[in-house]
Amino acid sequence: MVQIIINSSVDGAGPAEWLLVELQGEMVSRQNSGLAGNLMGDLLYTKEGVPVLIVGHHILYGKVVKLEKPFAVLMKHSGLPQGDEVPMETNHQNPTTYSVAALIKKKLIFKTRPKPIITNVPKKV
Amino acid sequence: MSRTLEEVQATIQIAKLKENDLQNTIHCLTFGESASSGDYCLMELDDTLCKHIEAGKSLVIRGDLDERAVLCSEDKTYDLKIADTSNLLLLVPGCLTPDQLTTDNQASSQLVHAQIWGFSNSYWELRKRHPKLKKLKKLLMENPYEGPGVSGQEDVPEGKYTMGDLLERIQASEEELEAQLQTIHACEVNGYWRLLDFDYEMRLLGHITQLVDSESWSFSKVPLRVSLEELGCLEPQEMVEHSLNCYGRRYTDNDEVFFALNEDKVCRATAQMLLQNAVKFNLAEFQEVWQQSVPEGMGTRLDQLKSLALVDRSSKPETIFLLRVEDLPEDTLERFTHLFTMREKWTEEDITPYIQDLCGEKQTTGALLTKYARLSTQNGIKVFNSRRTVAT
Image (cartoon, rainbow over all chains, first blue to last red; front, side, top):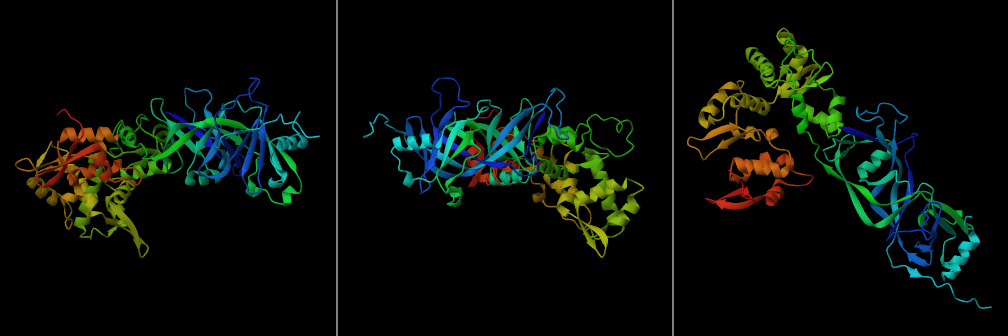
């Protein structure tokens, strides 16, 4: 049987808290070059605390939601960890472990239909 | 190449948003370099697990290649499943929420560059479940302990398991495993957890009840010290004490340790000892022998035998036979199939002890019966039978 350990603290302090941003649909980069390093959009908040996201030519309105069930972000590590007794499966050379990178207790969810931004409005001189 | 505040403000203008309506902090979100690497995942937690992780405690995933994986904390077991969502979930470390934006940290417009560390459209879903403990007894039965000095058997490590060994094979948390070891009267001998051979277990109990009888003690006040002195020549003291712990409640009175023997447990064990020797017994005869076999002053009652034995009131004369719930299938559907194959119709009173352990959190046996059985009335009594046709 396999035992995979999920470690929760690396340095004694609890894990950091991150934010989840939930969007409908999927994202593709315009040049099909992959998403890494690319700009996604600008996130603003109104004075009433409503989150607003400008992505490409769209503007989305969302809301802040406290998660009923928080998430843990788990990072996978293949290979021997630094720590002490990790049970070794005799079949595996390098046991897999996970660590909790962060906890997520809140999310911004954007469920409304994106509104297009019309850009070709000539500026009045 | 990164966006400037001016560029963002221009975008805001084009989008026809008024800067007056907005908070001063703007986050510019970009995808991080390792966002697509996939060496991470999201796991949904409940409050208990969240606090567990915040306290720095670890969790373990346990499972054989052919088993469904479970997640264990120190005292609970959860089923692990992957749930998909049609939405995109972005993970952003450095992002503030409106309640974190105060007038202090927002003197003027400012741009915060926040990286999207990762994204996903699935997550691990956890559901609390019963630990899978049937395997424990199976493992410990490979080499039951028959007492010291049983020749040839004690030197081999085969069929002997330490706690660490057990945790590697059983899908349960450590605390649930320890509780079960106690329930089945397992004993740690030389670092290995051992199940006692039933005859040996009864021999130990027999020594104790005979001593109680010959010393004319009350079985609610069995002195530990004297018991160990008197019986130490027959059996190892640890085993005598183990037996007292299994069948009695330990307490101190004036600095002396006593045990109050549990009438139900003793009667139950005695019944098992009698019933295991035959397929079934004449009920009346059994009840007589049973009462005579238990210590003086203890009373036997049929309800002590729930989940251990079953009475057949349809046979003439009425009979009773051994049926232990721990010998039945662990899976709910298999359990019901087995029970209905054995006996076509069950009263609620008879079947309840054999399905009690299947109940999930907040689930009643009534709910299980509604789901897995069909109710009918026979001679004015409610009976349950199978929902499907079962080959008898």
